[in-house]
Image 1 (cartoon, rainbow, N blue to C red):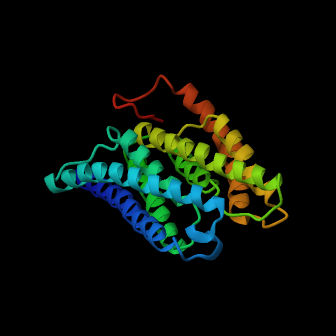
Image 2 (tube, rainbow, N blue to C red):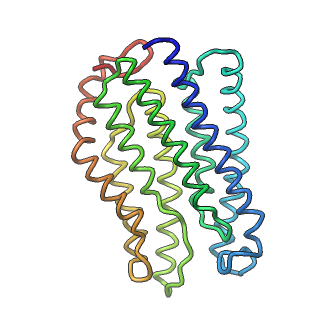
Length: 271
């Protein structure tokens, strides 16, 4: 791969991640500001206990995510201004933590949620993953592992359920709230780790434990609210994720183990 093409792809990755931070920051900040009194049952002043937890998570996520995102965005901006490549391998851990931190808030439904802006932010994040995959393929990495990684990682990210209010009767209500908050608390870090592994190693983690945890937690969330409202979006991506893993992920998992001793000096997987 030519240096010019490598630099272009590096810059596109930077743009994708920074736009994710900016768009989700703006959307979540507006949510915190305007949802205090507006949003019906999702308003903070509505008295619903769900909102106290959701807004607390959103506020903490917004503060922590912003601090971490600014730190890593400054490093990216410096590399652009200096004309150098930004090392995503070296910055993969900080990047994954920052992405995950602000994502916690994105998984809380509030009275002022701009779904279009949220999807635009997630679209920029996924676009950065795709550009990363293109860069890895051009660099001679194992194309099967790279392509399956970015598809599986994208599908998995869509299985994390957004926390919503429910008006079911107890004890089903308590079980549902527990399931959806546990799903967010567990699956966002899992996604962050899978992303870290993809950015740093060039291949995501295909451990069978991750789809199993996703199926249990996201599945419980969908099942418990089935009679009230079916979360079709999460259900579809759960199915697609499991199909992807069974069809390609298991092969990738075995291939990674087989190729574990054939890494390049920078820790990437080769064909």
